[in-house]
Length: 510
Image 1 (cartoon, rainbow, N blue to C red):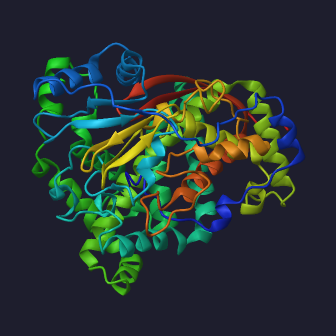
Image 2 (spheres, one colour):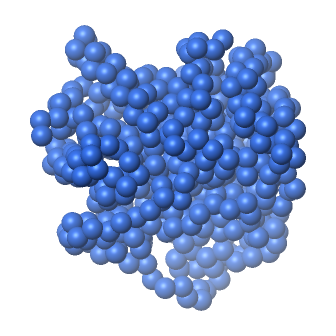
């Protein structure tokens, strides 16, 4: 999953967020180093370092370094921090010429400065979901969908209310449909392993994610519609047309930079694909569209917002998050797998062999493992906001004056791997968020465009489905360790996150 608003999943029942600390969780937490953040204090002012270089040339220079420089994207930001001795710096963000009018940003590259992007009294989010450029509304039926709407706009509240309704009105179907669809996924992966010795998790995950979302939230199986099995392929192509200026597809540098980063792909080339998706949602989402009318939203605007929420935000989020979660768990090793399997199976047995919200609440290690995956590799890495007024943005050590109208940019992986907040920040520690110390750290888990300790409201841009994302990720971990004692993976790169191949599955023995 991905409103600068993040992956905009809709809201799940409040119980999806419930947290129960157990003696075992607290004991496990004592094995980890204590992680402490200093209290807020007044800081000396410093001018924001860095420069944008000459017009056009400076932006092109930064774009080439961002996509093709040593160290990749992380190296681009780390080199700026090192060069200026500051985690708040001025730089140009891609795509720049000739897609974005103004690539200049003030980059926030630590956990202390990053949260200003959540404060909609300080920053405006209008049309900033994808950053310094906005894709053509021809790709969304002619509408500015919720992800691009600022909370100050009158249609923000009704549209976000609609997304809350989208996931809450069939909440009783989420767990059983997830288990049914992802149970089939694991059966297919087992068959592929038996046949060729390995299985591409992402390939099967794409089909399962779209099927689950449609069946759980709309009560419709997309394979039994005119879409048949084409949904994931159509969505992936449509998303490419929106995000191509920001993607590195591994093409030759000159070809890729000229075709993808310098010009927008014409929306007309994907119109037929998008129309097929829209036709499906007009029919399958009738009940949700009826609710939209009661909220004062036109039926057609509702269709395109539902499509975007389910296909771009939700499906896109699962396409990125689930392989990432499997990758980190796979690398965690057999000892961690044994702890997770024991916790999952004990909780499920205690509840009559059923996976329920109550059973999930008794799996603190599972929940911590999910939070840790969201921390170390947040599904949406970048957030933007335009300063509504002159302000001072504080890092850990300095205050920086930002002027009204300047663009603020946050690179979340540097905020959530800030060594001033997290011990051993580059390591995946599945028990990091257990116990009191772990609970304290949750406010620094900000994948949802807000702290994990907060709940989304109609007045902010925090992901409407924050709790839903965590819920289904926990369900994936539970399903995995109900079936298997351990598993192995091979990991590669892809345009949207990680490519994960499952190379072995050891079936449950206890």
